[in-house]
Length: 338
Ligand code: SAH
Ligand code: TRP
Image (cartoon, rainbow, N blue to C red; front, top):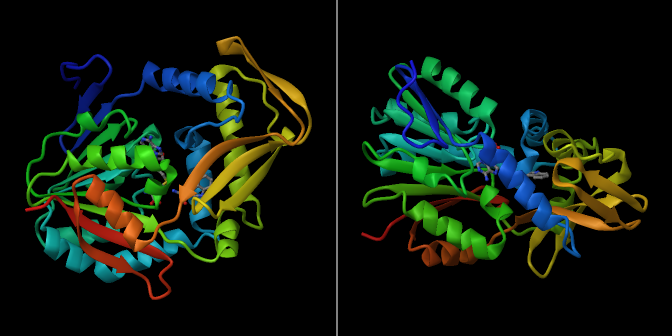
């Protein structure tokens, strides 16, 4: 049954256990168009990473998570496994809000612990990929009897105000090291936005990838099977489909390099030959020199100090710092000051 639509940009479809809010529609295309107009007309071309995740991109990302070189997923999973019970006890969360939830594979460990602790009532996944939010809602409501799922299909940089009002102690989770995909300035701005979702007694659980041997890092973003390369090039297929561009993905090489000064990984696409592409929907011609590189993502690596400073800048204090024995990856529990 359709509910009245309050915000014309966000339609709500309510069923008993599942509510889905969609904030995308035209907004999605508009934001891609704006990002292309802005990013491909600069001397150093750049596109933001959220456009990677169409259905194919989400599938490729899942494959990345299983790669031997890509240690973050399995490491974060191990940390969660070891600490889920403690986190459930510390937070006593009645609702879990997850930003960039994807398939919520690792989240199940937290849901299990909160479910067993008897506090969990609602899960609120927020993701740009519609299929992810919908299938995750279906799966979790059947896996956890009594759980309500309120999914938000939207851009977490623009639609955090669409997260429903809290109904009890809240735990916001932001996993996968996705915080590293923000450039430093907007990272702190985004953390401040997240902090606004938290009241007294609420918590944020955030995953951050740690600074380490550059070779380990570059391999994690340039695997031997070429899955990451395919994921990177998939961005061009998104532009071809959504904006009628005529990129040939085979005209570009995948590049992953570690920037030692900033301590972040950069993902780029490098033109194999000089050529000009047309983005028909925007009436835009884009020229690439041979060897010219376009930045498609940064993935910042953290130290404990950097995470604490960023949290403090957002008005949050560290409660626990959880890491694996090799200190590859860290989970941080934070809260508003009491
Ligand atoms: N949390 C999962 C997935 C991480 S991949 C994990 O830890 O494995 C990043 C996820 O964030 C993807 O599912 C992608 O669709 C989503 N995402 C990326 N940018 C986004 C944005 N701006 N707004 C909402 N979701 C976004
Ligand atoms: N949040 C992930 C990370 O920074 C995203 C990611 C992993 C990614 N591998 C990628 C993004 C390859 C683009 C290309 O680790």
